[in-house]
Image (tube, rainbow over all chains, first blue to last red; front, side):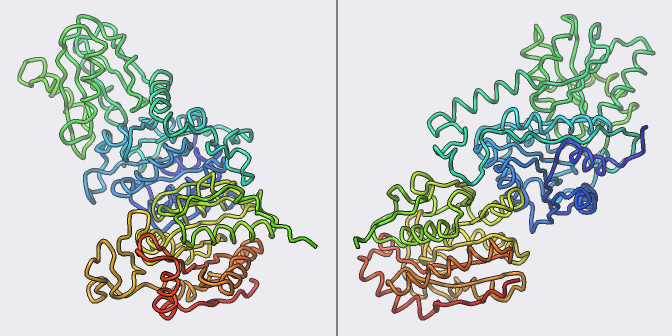
Amino acid sequence: MKEMWKGNHAIAEAALRAGCKFYAGYPITPQTEVGEYLSARMPELGRTFLQAENEMSAAYMLFGASACGMRCMTSSSGPGFSLKQEAISYLCTNFLPALFVNVIRWGPGLGNLDSAQTDYLRDTRGGGNGDYRLVVLAPNSIQETVDLLYDAYDIAERYRNPVELLSEAALGQMMEPVEFPEFKEGPTDLDWVWDGTGDKNSYDHGRPTTAGKPAAFRKKIETMRENEQRWENYKVQDADYVFVSYGLPSRTTRTAVDKLRAEGEKVGLIRPITAWPFPYKGFEEVPGTVKGMISVESTDSGQVIEDVALATKKMCAGNIPVYGLFSGQNIPTPVHIIEYFEKVKSGEEKEAF
Amino acid sequence: MAFEKRRPVLVEHTHTFCPGCGHGIFARLLAEAIQEAGYERKAILSLGVGCCCNMNPPSWSGDVLQTAHGRAASVATGVKVARPDLLSISYQGDGDAYVIGLNETLNAAYRGENICTFVILNNNFAMTGGQMSWTTMPGQKTTTSPAGRDCKVTGMPIKVPEIMATLPNVSYVARGAVTSPKNINQLKKYIKEAISAQINGEGYSFVEIVSPCPTNWAMNVKDSIKWIDDNVIPYYPLGVLKERTGE
């Protein structure tokens, strides 16, 4: 039976159901409820909650626990998630799985507490030093948050790479009916873990040698890019204009699509469910007659639109114009989206790419 | 009866430290202490960044995690959460643990994480070629204090073990040195106490090791030892700063 759950609490419970045995974190709005919930819930389950001195330290605690094969997570937002980038880079170079949750708040620096998607480019391009990527899961509902988290550790262990859940302030704060899956355990037969014996210590624990790392990173990134794309297409096949939107803006965009369809406009929606790898495969359904692609996102100057433009260039014939509606620290309303669409159609709005 | 020379299994290969460096002596003592506790196949070292990077295999034959600059105590904390049955040890230098990592080092101690931290104190950032550290002595020349350290603007050398000793959740704190047979024997006892404290679940234990760096000090080994005896140990006195209570 479905129950009403707050997004951040659902993140916490879903991670536990997925096998999380250790959480380390530091409070920051709008995701503090994740740690608060776990501080009470994890001792009930005989698992470990640790309030760290800062965001970096929490992420490095994951380094140690993950190396020993434990499913673990940390969560943050805004400047706090920036501080975790160094450790994420270290986890990647050491081929260590872990779960990172970013409940985005708007803006650079301290920013503010408004819901936004302004960390999109940083989080889909690595963020720390080096050439790496995380699989970035980007739900648009609390139930989808739970469902994606249930697979997160399996993905992380498959590639020996951290996985990120990319949420938004409003998605973390709001309540929706959800149903949780049963508790599951992580694998006990990982063949690379640090177990103190030194037996796997032909230096590597299954990691590539320094000389082999560039090729290994490339192979891993290409494999994840091929296998992990997730998306949902809505009324794309005959569309003249295709919206592309993930997370909460995708919900209002879908409403706008329905309203425009009711007025006879042929519009559709591609909704990325993975922000990385970006779902290029979703663009295969875009008809050759399409007149334009429209990115709808809660950013200031356009971030998702760069991926929309690249995917359009790769997957669609001709030089299809790409437009962007950027709503800053607001979720665009259906009215806002429809007004923008009318301007695109009339030629008043110029393409960005 | 013939004397049998036994090399601890964790240092079965030759290390890669500079001639005269104190790290090699400490590594040997650590390997002996771990083996004597019966943990040579139940230990994970979390290494800082600096000359302790030379403790990566093959120098060390056990499990090693090469962490980031200053964060080894956090990684060792995570290791202990996942594997409380193993010895979790962070091995760092003074630049790593006391400068960039002061926050993580002190906070692991403050919480009383059940890990051991060993810090080699050689009064400079040695791996990067001898820059000033927070432990550089007054007037000491380094590549970033070429006129000699001016403590009025850079601070006096920091005494982290003395701070550690004030924290209630810290179980054991000592400062040893590798400068004489007597000091080496004493240091080994400190290391064994620190390891024993972790095995006994007493919480954070910490040993600082005063150590020569002839390469970056531009001294021969003999002069380096004399310089320590004349300058470092009078400021950084050796001994136990906090005794174990067994709790």
